[in-house]
Image (tube, rainbow, N blue to C red; front, side, top):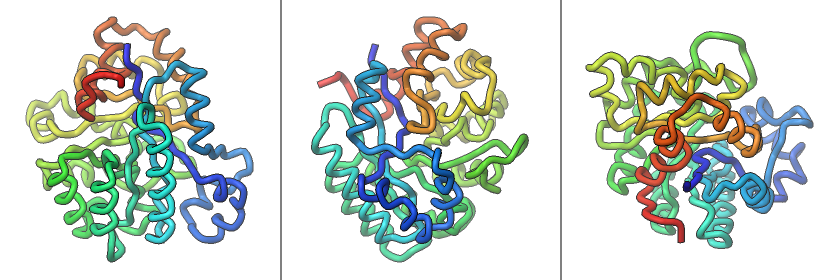
Length: 281
């Protein structure tokens, strides 16, 4: 069984070593990483985790900085990492759609072989999902036929660092506005997938996938068999590593009441189809 982790974060060693410097440069980064126990990982550490946990491939990306210069540096590190482990890592680009030059940077990254855009952080980067600034990058990704991964979260429950004010309605409107762009809604789309029980919503969101990142902090494990009933072909195994270790996440999934077919689809089959991976090289 091919196992693909669709949501992992990597940082250049310099950023990890000089965390305090970058805390002063970006308010959203400070919100998420000011606590000294907030984990950051390099590409080498991600590969070591994959080897230890039995993960074959991972989608990985840098932090979605507000500063486009820092986004470019993050993209360079992802490009370098993918070139070191082309059989293991699939890189996504990060840009700030609200800042001039985002489309040019996106084009550069796609030409260099990155597989998608994300994880976009609307609130941290200074825009909302309804803002027109997103339209051009969404259209660009439709042209490249590559997915856009967007940070989303549930509208109810406890607060935690990184829980944004984005609404399910704005995510839905974005999907409806760009039916030609494949979207991946992080963190189960904040629960949006439950509304796919409505036929009209299912049709409108036919190009929207949902990743499982951070599930262990947010939901009971019942969410996996429930999702397998509602969106069997659109659920994507994703850990949010290094927030949660891949081994721990996989063990929880293996203990859930999923059929063999559903488990295979979740852990890698759906991602392989979305990313057009026919086999492990």
